[in-house]
Each structure stands twice: as structure tokens, then as C-alpha cells.
Image (cartoon, rainbow, N blue to C red; front, side, top):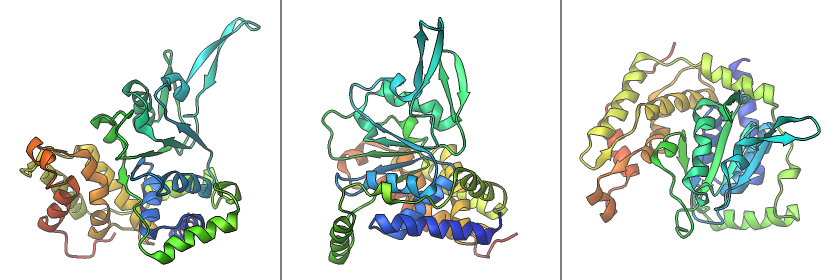
Length: 324
């Protein structure tokens, strides 16, 4: 696939999502970049801001198979990955696959299930495989998780452990719309749809095979200069050296920033990564992987996002345009 075709598909996916979701194009571009980088996204924001709608619309726009899990306290790991069931008519166990056997998995309110259930996704998210009673099965490409959680409803929730947070490529926030005109546009579109869920109106822009091709372009055709490698590494290492942080970003954080920067370059129509690709995603890719020191976390004066922003101001970026 040529880069011109890639950009055409990317623009069409974003345009389709914008038809049904009122929000900033930059947010949608970040979701697309994460998906093209074969990474998972965690949406965290207040209730009613369209997190679930965005995930559903995006899944339909890509044309890939998708399934949804509504996380609840009584959910079991087998409800996610599946289990083996004894069939008396055949006198053997057969595999009942769970909803994780799909291309795009919408994990709604993921923090409402206990850690035992959340851990069922760890192997799926990192290794793209599922182990059921000793049998390991690979998940089809593409596979990525779009998860949502609300930060203000703490009763009856189970905070995601750091090991699972680290498996999300990006942590994003939808935020409130920026103007009264956009607020009105939300109401106008709802009146046009005549239903709360417009996803059955959406026609997929790509197919599973085409989307795999888009991911292959990101993986093989985007050049990353040696200076960019050092730039990413210096940013990640700086998160471990700041006095505000107890635990800095992991090497997986650097890999995530590297992968999503390549995807953003391709979406922008370039076959090479520039420092701005890295800067655009640094906060989203690294902040949720950092643990603040207790005194700063309690005072809530310094946030991980602010720390990453300060690091970006201090770490010198390559000054020349870097291309193949």
C-alpha cells in the first residue's frame, strides 16, 4: 500500500468518526494512531462525555469485528476469555470462546470488576494470545482494547494495577466540548438519528484485511532516525530522574512512544518521524505509567502530566528535519 492510499484511508476513517462523534479531531487522530500502532487505549473521564460512543463508532468505522464487555463486580474471567464445556452427546470438552476473540474489544467501565477479572486481559493485551485450561490460542490481527473508566465514581470500583495500566499504549480524556455551538451540534445530531445509539447507521471505511495493511505500513515503511531513538530514550529516562516521581516510565513506555510516533507520521502523510510526532503523544503515552512520590501525590500540586510537559521543555529535540 502506498502512503497516499494510507492517508486517504486514515482521513476517511477520521471523517466517518467525526460524523457521529462531536469532539476534537486531535483526540480522534490519537485513537487512530494507537490502533494503527496495534496498541490499546484507556479513556478516563467524567460520565456522559461520550467515551463509550467514541469507542463504538471507531470500531464500526474501521470495518473490523468487535465485541463489548460490560464490566461488573460479578464478572468472571471465563466470561471474558471463554471456557471448555463438557458435551454429553459427544463425550468431550468443546471450547466456548469468550468475547475477547475479536479484533476490537470494547471494555466498558473496566475498573468495576475485581483484579482477578482484570488480570484475565493481561495475556491478551500483551501477547495477543489466550490460555484456557493449558491450551494457548493466538488472537487474530488486529487486536486492540478500547477501555473506559470514570475517575469520580470510586464506590464499587477496583483501581487498575500498574501492571495493567502499563499495557495501555495511551491514556486519553475526551473532555467537555469547547463551545456552545458544539453543545448544540450534539443535540442536533441526536434529533437527526432519532435514536441514542447511531452505530448501526455507520458503514465501515476499511475491512479487516485493509486495516492490517495499514498497520503493516506503519510497521515497515516509516523511517525513524537515530536521533529520534535518542530523543525518545532521553525523555523516558528523565521521567525516572525527576525528584517528583517514585517510579518512572518503563521501557515499554518508550516503545509505546516510538510506535505511536510512527503511526502519527503516516497519518500526517510522511514516511519519516519528526520530533513533533514524539511531543504530541509523550504525555498520553508516559504519564499513566508514572507513580508520584507520596508527598506530591497527596498534595496534588504536581501531576504526572505536568512532569512530562516539563521534561519536554528541558530535553533538547533534534533540530534538523530527519528523513530517510
